[in-house]
Each structure stands twice: as structure tokens, then as C-alpha cells.
Image 1: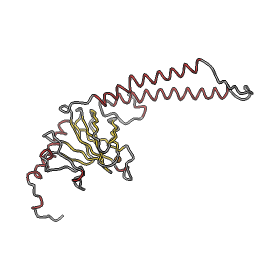
Image 2: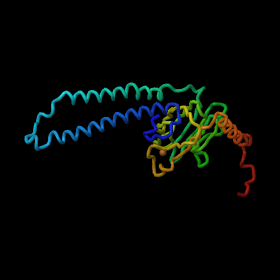
Image 3: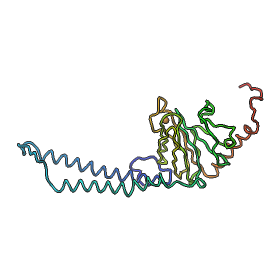
Image 4: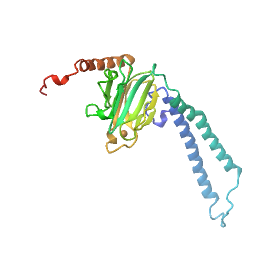
Length: 262
Ligand SMILES: [Cu+2]
């Protein structure tokens, strides 16, 4: 609808609303920019030195300037009260219920995104920063019964299309920002806090998770992917992941197997 602004393709249910807000704000800014530009040229001519050899210290007094100021303020209040605040209230208050939504934990760290799915039991396993190693970057405690079926991915968020997603966002180190441009989602990830973010992806495809806060020297490579799939494809992916997890859970002593040559 408003692709003349060059925005990324909209891929979530609320993207249109955000785009409309951005478009309206740009239209107001365009009117102000052109208006102020024309006024500037008028003033250059009207108050030129040749026509006004003596400066007036009282300044201009007219109804037009006051009227314009009030009109601009009214338009801004309309944008705020009727567009921005309701749109934000929906993001920050009207969360989908945990039953209908797919609930995912996303943890940012220097410089990647770790993603945790609760698995069939619907319960997230315990994570502990003390358990973080190079092959367990989220610090998941696999001994926790709730953790046995948890799916962990790095930089790869898989989601089904047309189903609300509730992300619990946090960070292990510094402030990162979870940016899904096509979904019109952006939220800071703050250490010590779990911040809920929700949206409904509505376009199948692969998109990017960009870290939108300068978070250190490797910020430029803090890039993940979001894959939006049909519900069936997503379920298949979940089943495949669960199958891969099963042997690891069934044989709790992998150290007993002799090391194989690589
Ligand atoms: Cu970052």
C-alpha cells in the first residue's frame, strides 16, 4: 500500500498499521518541509535590507503564524492519539495467550542469537549462565526434565505462518536489539530482563534478524535468520528436531562410545 517509501516488504499482520503511521508522519513532514522552505524564501524577500533599512525589534505579529503553529500541533496530536498510541498499546498490552501462541525464548549475546523452543511438553528447560560453553551457548541444563525435549538453534528462528508468536527476549551480556524489519518488530534485549514481544508472521519466506544496537566489535556479524513456513512444514521441522534429540536423551553416556576418526 505504501511501498513508495521503499520500506521492506511487510510480512506480519500489524505491518500495514506501522507502515500507515510511517506514511502519515512522512506526509506531515513533507508538508512542513515545503511550507517552511517557501516561508523562508518569502522572508528573505519580504524582509530584505533594501526594503527595511531599519530593523524592527518587535517582530512579526500576525494571525497566520499562530494559526499555522496550532494547526501543526493539532495534526501531531491526532497522529499521536489516534494512530501511534493505539498501535503501541496493541503491541505492549494485547498479548496473545500462551495457549494459542507459539512461545519462543530468544537470547542475544556477543554476537549471535540463541533460540529455545519448549518442545512438546510446553515447558522451557532451565538455563544457567554457568553452563554456557561453546556448544551450549544458551546454557541449557539438559538434566532438567523440562529441558529434555527443548530445541535449541543458533541464529535460526523457525516459525509457522499465520500463528501468533510470543518471544521472550533477553540478553546474556550487553544491550542488543531484536530487529525483524519485514515483521516491523524491534525490541531491545536487556541483560537481567525478559521482555515479551509478539507478532503474527503472515508471509512464507526467509528474512533476517538484525541486531539493531551497536553492541561491540562484532556487531556487524550479529545476524540471524527467520524462516516462516507453513504449519505442516514447521511441524515437520519440529518432529525432525525431536527425533535428533531422542538418541541423546536415551543414551545419557555418549562418552562411553569409542571416539571415531574424523
Ligand atoms: Cu548485538
